[in-house]
Image 1 (cartoon, rainbow, N blue to C red):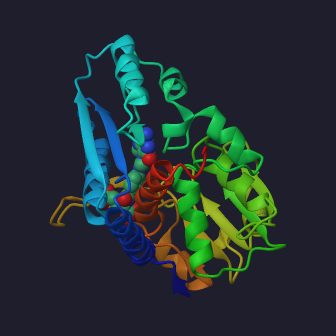
Image 2 (cartoon, rainbow, N blue to C red):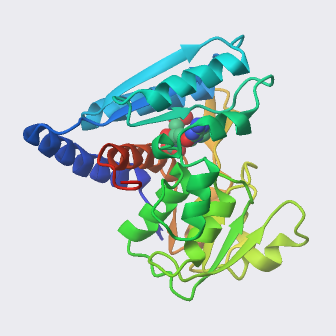
Image 3 (cartoon, rainbow, N blue to C red):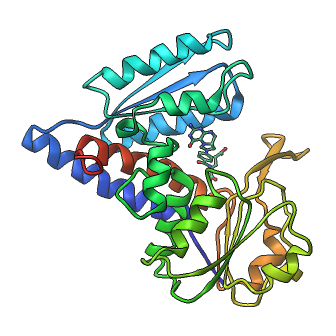
Length: 293
Ligand SMILES: Nc1nc(=O)c2c([nH]1)NC[C@@H]1CN(c3ccc(C(=O)N[C@@H](CCC(=O)O)C(=O)O)cc3)C=[N+]21
């Protein structure tokens, strides 16, 4: 069993991006500039946005967080988005999810100029990605693809089973891995909450991608010996007696599943660190006008 070390790969890619930013500076080109909009005070969102700021500083990007109270109206938020769409210094921006209930998330996503949508959530980017055109690919599926590529995991002709059908993970990763590419050329099955007897499918998986958001859902009896297991879940649970009083659990029961695998991602330190890096990759592409010209 070998760990898919997302932290190590993330550091490797960040070093590559930092070198490119240095080269851009040297030539007097545009320093990539990422903006994050953060509404309210959700603890996890604060953490992620903090990670993004730190990562931007590490690679030499310009970054900014625009903070708004929960009381911001949808119209006011849409107006802030319009300003960012029209600000030539801003290469890309994200609106951290979740948003307060009185704001329509889909409306917000669709207000973002696809050229600056470095989260890859706008239907234009989703659609382009789905048909294999240049696009901003959203962070989690892109992170999974990077892990498979950097560990040179064979994918052609493999059966990839995805648990979860969300717009931001299950659906896009199933699409990418079925495309004619590397990593790709997989036979893909999507399972979800209405799939009876999930184990019947997971036992056939050469590559098992788990993204349903249920802590320790996948147990050893559900995994084929030698499988590659990618765990996208992160659930915070109480851990009395530890220093923090809590810990993070994946969607896979790591201790019993790991010994059966050829490769497996840890949680934390697997896909998570790569999601931040994907955002940096997209912002660099935006600054270089690589996707839309
Ligand atoms: N507009 C928007 N874009 C997002 O990309 C977005 C979002 N909203 N809302 C929430 C989710 C979640 N997300 C993660 C980012 C980093 C880690 C990450 O770095 N995880 C570390 C552990 C982090 C920790 O210690 O809590 C790891 O798995 O090793 C995880 C999850 C981005 N999201």
